[in-house]
Amino acid sequence: MSNTSLFSEFSPADRAKWMDKIQADLKGADFDKKLVWKTIDGINIQPFYMHSDLENLALSHTNIAEFPYLRGHQSERNDWHIRQDFFVKNIDQTNTEILDALMRGVTSVRLVFKTLTLSSQKEFDRLLRGIDISAIELNFSCSEGNADLLSMLSNYIKANGIAPAKVKGSLNIDPISWTAQFGTCRHKNLNEAYQHLSQLIQFADEHLPHIKLLAVNSHLYSDAGSSIIQELSFAISITAAYFDALNEKLSPERIAHHLHFNIGLSNNYFMEIAKIRALRFLFAKIAEANGVEPSKSNTYIHAQNTIWNKTIFDPYVNMLRVTTEAMSGAIAGVDAMTILPFDEVFKSSENFSKRIARNTQILLKEEAHFDKVIDPAGGSYYIEAITDTLVEHAWQQFLKIDETGGFVKALEEGSIQAEVRKMAQERDINIALRKDILLGTNQYPNSTETMFEKTQIPVNVKLDNRLIQPYRGAEAFEAVRFATEQAEKTPTVFMLTYGNLAMRRARSQFAGNFFGCAGYTIIDNNGFASIKEGMELAKQQKADIIVLCSDDDTYIEMAKEAMASKPSSEIVIAGYPKEHIDTLNEMGIEHFIHVKSNVLEMLQMFNNKLLK
Image (cartoon, rainbow, N blue to C red):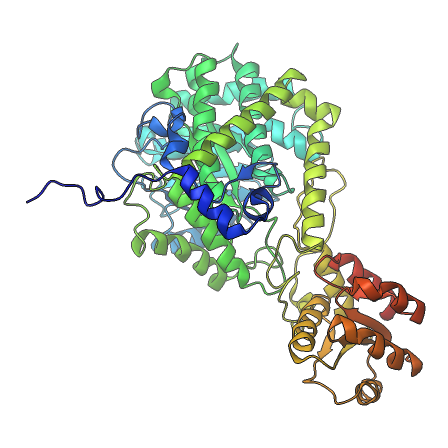
């Protein structure tokens, strides 16, 4: 057989030649404006990457399961735990639900205590009855009683003859992020919280060596609208703060051992893969700087879907969102993952939605075999390059926070909250302008869908006592839809289509999509032989809004006849005929809808005018 390379007859790829070809195809258009994507963090994403982009990147030459763990710490496969949350309200019912979920593929359980606290060892034992805790991960999240939970778990292990080393899991203790949420921690101050935490860690090290106690809940910030760079920089800033606060009480290795991350997964598919890889690298560097041996500088990452991009309307789209987010987490090599039920943002999830959430991960393992290949993104020019970029930008942001005195001081001074709010407001504007799409909410809505009566959880309720405010980007649009649903009469939008066939159809579809986001009744039409015919039918239909749909040059004629009939309806023009704007304004036309419109503001304005 010949050893000649199959590609020897082709010349090596050359960036200059590619750029020449691209510039020729652009025909004079600006390369940066047309093809370079600028993220909300200000990162420029190029339209193509080549092997030469990796030549100077140290990150791309790291090995699997070796410091700084960019490519993960697993050396044989890319397995992760399928985690499910259980909100403990009734002990026996929760126990039954856990046993059922374990039979259906769950390998990691998180018990969330919001209102119920366990008052005795017997109650704890009933909660875990029949569960082989040595075969799963066991995680706890509660507002009070951490010491009691650890003691009860230790007693349970002893009573059942379970080797402590076989019990793995976590306790979600994160006093800094708790302070970021509520303005205060569960103790008198953070110093007291650190003291209590160090005592718990010493107890766990003796009795529960594989239960991690110190969490960094960076998903709280992505749930509030933070960007990827912000979440990364906040995560490592909080990590550094814990090393500083606990170093006199615990060795660096013990702190690193107990630290684990609960991160958010958003719909920015490739960036999320890069974010998780970057987080492992950044943690390893922070740990190394604090004296942790390289071999012990790997960390545990649990990922869960951020609520920020989840919607109430067209909720099945949430299934698509969580699936791509789960793929990001799996490809990046997380240790555990929680996939939210698609309806969790507006109701108490039932068996169907919980099953779909579990099966999303099972399919990724059993059908797509994502658990078989370690770091499948490794070597991708694009992902390696943006991983390096995220590391650089997050590190610079971390240094800025560090220069001001660290995360806690920045939080006390309000700069963390201000940065989160600023980013959230920018993202809100992008949604209002439809630069960012929430399918079924601000684009391509089902205007006949009603959801207010199906919503069991109070929506658009701001928690005034929270410094970092969780919310969803869809909330403002949903408020418009809910107002429409609760009105005495649903506004009717009539498409007066006339003239140029292609333009009238395109603009009527655009307008129907536009007003459908408010849940208005849309009456579309194939086209009228005359403007008068259209206006008469619109009056018969008692239309609240009449949208003129045609080409720009026909709008003067249409507006004259429409306004001459003295309509009681609001007259709207689909498009922005800039050469005729002044003339149309003089005729009394005020409203124009087009691709640069602030959709949210326009719909809020019409709701204020039309709803009773």
